[in-house]
Amino acid sequence: MKSSHTTQGPAATDAASTLLRDLIDYAGLFPPASLSMSRSVANYDEYLRSGRSWILGRFILPVARLAEFEDAFARLPNPASGENGAEWRLSALLGSDGLADAARISEFNLRLAKSTTQRSAVIESVELKVTSSREIERISAFIPRALSTYCEIPTASATDCIPALARSARRAKIRTGGETADKFPAPDDVVEFIRLCAANNVPFKATAGLHHPLRSIHRLTYQPESPLGMMHGFINLFLAAAFLRAGMNSKVATQLLEEQSPQAFHFDEDGVSWHEDRLSVRAIAAARQDFAVSFGSCSFTEPIDDLRSLSLL
Image (tube, rainbow, N blue to C red; front, top):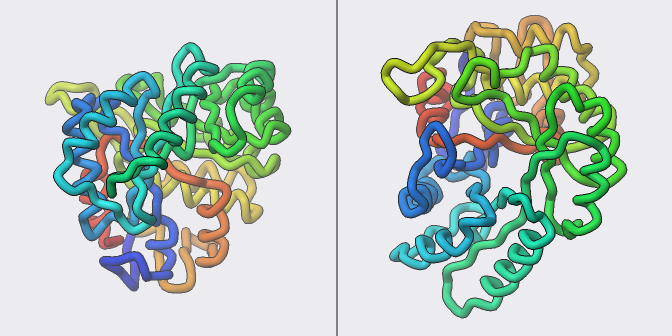
C-alpha cells in the first residue's frame, strides 16, 4: 500500500489523509494499555502537540472518572489545544445509572464552559452498551440530543437495534476486537452491521482490536506470551464502510474487509483503488464526515507507526 502524495499537516486533500483525518479516538485508560489517568492525559496532550494531531479524535473516559480527569487536566503545565479548536474533545462512557451520568455531564460542560482559565474541555459525545430497541428508546428519553450518542450493540442485535437508532437519531457502535479471539466478530457480521447502518443512515464508530491498518495476525495483548489472533484492519474497515455507502455489495465488501495485501490498495490525490474498484476523495470525505466516524484505540502511536511503515504518512 502506498500513497502517491503524503503530508505532514492538516491541509492535504488526498485520499489517504481524507480517510485518516480525525479518525483515532484515544482510549489509553482501557485494556490492553490500561494506563493511569495522569499518563493518558499527558499522552493525549503530547499527541495534540505533534505533527499527527490531525489524525487524533476524542479523548475517551468513563463518566465515573470525570473528577480524576479534571485533576490531571488541571495539572498540565499548558494543555495543547490541537487543530480543532481551543477545547479538548471528550467522549464519555455512561455507567449503570445513565440518568445521573447525563446530569453529571451537563454540569461538567457548564462548569468548564464558565472557566476563566485557558484550559477547556467539553464532552461532545457519550457511549453506552444496549442490547435491544427498547433500551434505545429508554435512553433516548433522558440523553440530550446535543450529545452524539453511540450505542454499542451486539452484531446479532443489529437488525433490531439499528432501525431504532435511526428513529431516535442516535448512533451505532461496533466492538471489533478485544483481549481474546472470541471478541473479534466475523467479517460478514461486520459488513452486515455497516450495511444496515448505511441503509438506515445511522452513523457509527468502532472500538477495540483496530491497532493496525490492515487485517493481519498479532498478539492480542501487550504481554510477551499473549496468544496470536487475526485482527481487523482499520483501513479495511473504513474503506469497506465508504464503499458500502457508495453501493458496493456485501460479498465484495467482505472480501475487502478480509484483504491482507498492502499492494491491493493504491491511494492518490483523486481517490483510492482496491483491485478493480475505485472510490473518489469526495466519496471518502462524505463517508467520514457523517457516517464512518472514528474508532477507539488504547494506542495512538502503534497505528501511526504502522501507517508510516506502509508509506501512508
